[in-house]
Length: 149
Image (tube, rainbow, N blue to C red):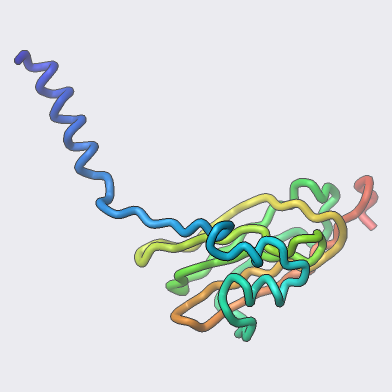
């Protein structure tokens, strides 16, 4: 075996050995289908987490006060809490659940996403930390045609 083949094979084996032995992700659309058809935020939170008792705080949310285009509203959130699951909800569309993230034990929650909203409404982020639901909510005003008011 020549040196190039040996190095190439060695790098391939090293890369494969770095892959985690167990990857886990829950398909919330399959396991919690009611969360994706809930029309109210409280119903959706209960469908995802089993409870809707929330504690304010522990999460930082950044969203625009006024969004001139409801099709691409930038939302970012972060928390230092060791959350197992984090979900994004809004009350401006027919379905309240936007996204659900499953966190690893050593993961840091720092997300930036874009969501759609038909009209002015509230965006709510909920994090499950050892069975306790931490939340933050912010109203986003969606203007039609970019009038800003």
